[in-house]
Amino acid sequence: MERRRAAGILTLAAACAWSACAIYDKSLLLAAPSEGDEAGTADGGGADGAIEAGRRDAGCQIFAPPPPPAKDDASGNVDVVFAMSAFRLVPGGTASVNHPGAPVPMDIDQRCTCPGPPSCTSPAAKPDCDTDGGGDDATGDLWATFAALAPSQFNDDSLNTGLRLGYNGTLIRLRNYNGAKNDTQVTLIAYESPGTVGVETKMAASPKYDGTDVWTVNPTSLVAGTGADAGAGCEGNDTICLPLIYDTNAYVSNGVVVAHISLTVTAGDVNTRLRVALSDVVLVAPLIFDGKSYRVDEGQFAGRWALPDFLGALQSVPDPLDGTQGLCGASSTYGNVKQMACEKRDVVSAQAKDNMGAECDALSVTVSFSAVEAHLGPIFQPPPPAQRCGAGYSDRCP
Image 1 (spheres, rainbow, N blue to C red):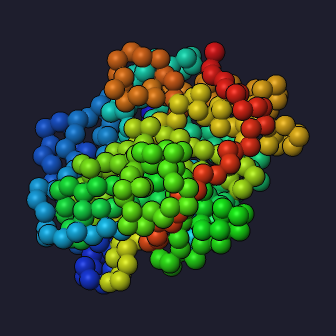
Image 2: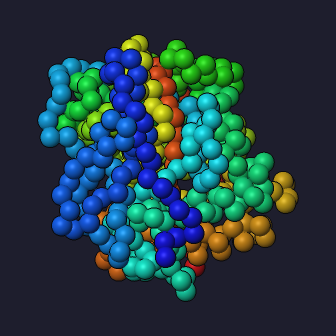
Image 3: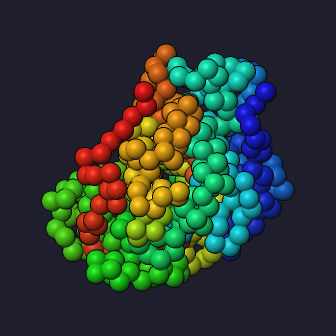
């Protein structure tokens, strides 16, 4: 049987005029046809969605993002920056105006675990099974458990606190885009942001999410790193703010941006900044254009959270049973969290080692998000997250 909860295929909404509404609606992940089937399109009330040709693995059809389009629809040169306005790690629940829908786990290792074998050697007696379509999201299960035990720290509302107050941010920039429904090659750039302008003096402004917000840029997202000129503005200044994280082979298929990058999202508030650092990420972002500006609704990204990074990041979180210490070191709560996380390892941290017999050393993650237009601001290096077990603290699974 497929894993612990079902993840249905997102359905297409009715089509509408390009100039007035969504380029593409919620059909982000569609089942790939089994061997012998031909690639085609899915019809859902008049809007076409791509179905990626793919193989059937162990009796299930793998969920995948739409494939590249055959050709460009137009010529143009759109350059737009988005600021993430909300995200969701915890599965379940419903969407709201300021809250994206629950993530639909994507397959990231080309394997349907259960009844098929896992893509890496699991340390657990029984491997962590995938959701329908080979979906990978071991972190979602863990976070749901944590949120039930300590909602003040682990539910999605708490994780979005810093984002709402302007003290954390993730910026996505789309360049060389023709502005149409299909573009065979675009550039997608990702930046970490310590927050909106003002965060430098601990006076960050709560974002309006109306296209006018200006977000600072963390130099860790730039080629120059910490050597970048502090305070230099990044808007229109690619010489100083040359990005470190980008995909020049991203594309737009039927209005959906698909890119492969690394990505870091900072969750929590100004005192508890949990860095979710993911490798080998596939990002799927449906663009919506209202005639004046773009936004992303019900976007998703999925990747791999290496266990040492996961365990090390937890030290910024106060122990829910003893606020005087962090989730690290000798904390008994941390010991239980570590055991659960180590037993949930379901992927390797490097995609190149998938299905090669390597030991599982990472947790799969699928995150849903929404984003609106924004502006790049000055470079600012924030203080590190709380290091409740010391600056040199690290840990790993046995």
